[in-house]
Image 1 (cartoon, rainbow, N blue to C red):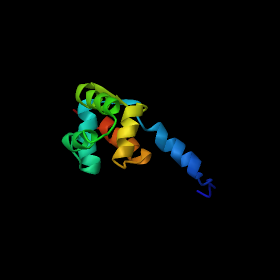
Image 2: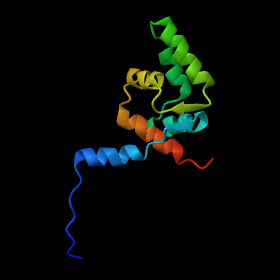
Image 3: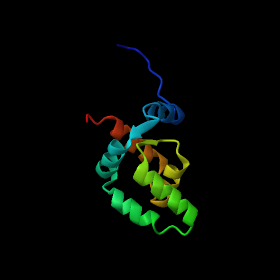
Length: 104
């Protein structure tokens, strides 16, 4: 077309990708997406959480994992759990995007 388009900056690309990340997903969708995206199970994550030295943090995360009806992307315990499992923020975003795309 002869149209000149400007390449997006890395910041613009990141902002665009972040706009696709849902603020929350159901627990069922979350666990299916974790399995499909990174190939680990809820039980695997629980076994790592059980090894935490801080009893209060361990108890809070265990309650969240077992009782949550949905997971909020901004939940600090979810982010701590991801860090503990060496899941970076981009991968956590992808898990939420994958979860939101399931037709259940």
